[in-house]
Image 1 (cartoon, rainbow, N blue to C red):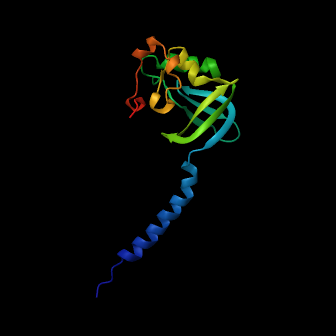
Image 2 (image 1 turned 180 degrees about the horizontal axis):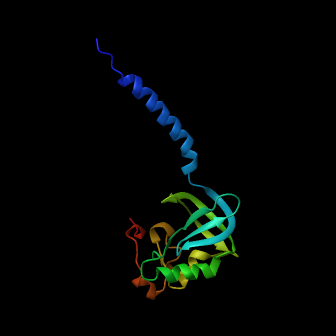
Image 3 (image 1 turned 120 degrees about the vertical axis):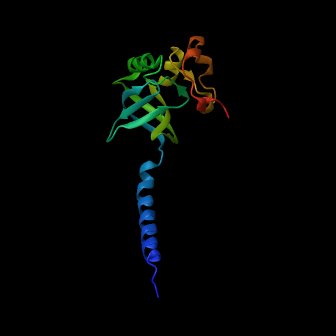
Length: 154
């Protein structure tokens, strides 16, 4: 009679994977609430908040800036640096994540930094996520900037 090792291997493997998932789940869970620290700019719509511990990467909610290698991307990044680099920043996180980044609205001296980039004509309102919060700020000259398909309302 042949003994199947399948059940002896499968069950411990399944239990091990379940335990790993339980340990990792808190690490990938999105944050909700307010964080604050020092602003460090990654690109035209993403910052790092350096505070206590590891920096937290935050995607500016509802802001569609070109990537650094796309036309206008370098200008958006440089402008955001003039707005917040090295400054105290406060971010209201909405509890979602995109590509491993927290998502939120961030402020320097109570001024929305995402609104500043859009108002300068260097980014666009990503209405699907902003709910049109920045629509009135978007400049006609920004229409030539790359606009990700995920920003269009569904």
